[in-house]
Length: 229
Picture 1 (cartoon, rainbow, N blue to C red):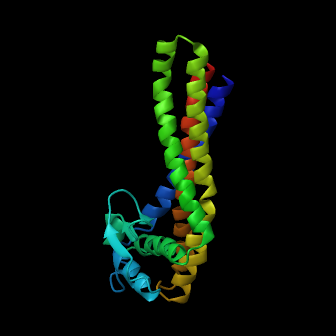
Picture 2 (cartoon, one colour):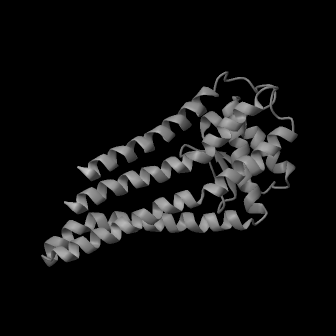
Picture 3 (tube, rainbow, N blue to C red):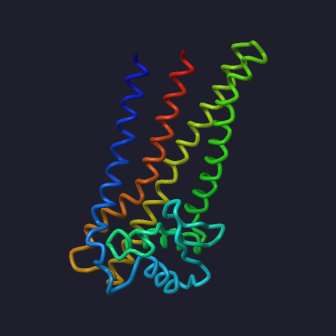
């Protein structure tokens, strides 16, 4: 019962940040044509990259979520943000350009974050394999200890992945508040009165990784419950 209660608490903690992030992003997609006279999110991203001497960094439309790809040197924006003219579109574009600036400057925080993300991906893959393989190991060896050890390796790998997501938060907040916010403010890219709303969007963009981390913890809690049985 204790672990079920913990799992429910974690589930609530997961869904609330996710719902808040989604609410903020959707709220400021209206009016959809607010920045039509100034340019879309994709156009602003291209302008900012050129302004900071990053003409070699591309801007593309994607369907897998807004992000900056340090390997391909490309800022990728979802259709609503790439072709959109909303406050959300231009603000998210500035956030992702912030990551490109971090990369171009070789900032230690960003480079460390990239290494952590790679480690998290590996950890999550190991966790998936171990947790799926646990019943098979138990069946083949007929040793409860072997199955338990396999599950424990998977759980630990998953926990490390969740921890990594939390450790990358400083990188996200720097992209939002250390890079994008000053650019939007000092460059006079926003309409009067929009800056305070843009700050909410930038916070939501950074906290996307909190939701991802909490989702990992929720999955981890589920497996701990299974393990205890």
